Image (cartoon, rainbow, N blue to C red):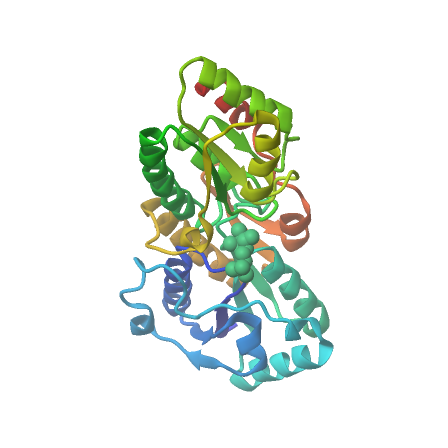
Length: 323
Ligand code: F6P
């Protein structure tokens, strides 16, 4: 293999640039020519492909977003556009792909490989930390720190006004961001899709806090909670509480931007190297991940379909810490 294509796809995540840089330089280290594919699968279909060199990825290790841009391509679900994508790869002589992204990215890669035989190795890039086969995904730590900074600030105003705040964090179907930001930010209550939410219990905890002279509270709500996001949850709680001075804050895409943390830069570097070397040593349809501080490869099937549980210790922590 002497030409490798690299792309980012799905929701961007801080650290993707550090991963691209690592992948490009690992290619060059092994005398392989790296190609950047812009806008993920969409750019592959539209032939937005160019050769990269060491300088193309200079001064990006500290930058959020992705220099290769990203997209969620609807067209790639269709056979015709996928054929065009393969022709474009062939025209450039690209023999393997490094795909940086999440669930959707790896599902697309698997189909693409099954149809055209091109080997693909993935690096997990998503703030959601929802992929099996890696303790953490690239971008998760940065997103948590961004959300935490916002929660600290909201706590100041919550405390000045004796208010309850319902703060919604991202994570799609996963509660990882909510657990880490909730525990780190000293939230009174954390609601995640991994455990059943009881609105009665939320209201009881808030009432008990009030009776113990707790005048302000933070409720972190994962966007995927089965009772709904912060708007739905707060209105259900209000029905039980009666009088309640509360505000809602949906942190949204701020969590996807900004400089990657040191932890994310290290992770991105290791996984960028791991993905390219995996391809060169014959891996295919696998994701590079770090488990217990060791580089491991997990099949796309497992990475996508196996549920990464949140350790029960983490789920129980807040019961103790918020009394
Ligand atoms: O997967 C990353 C993520 O930010 C999720 O947490 C969120 O649900 C989703 O992407 C938002 O996607 P979009 O940017 O397409 O609205």
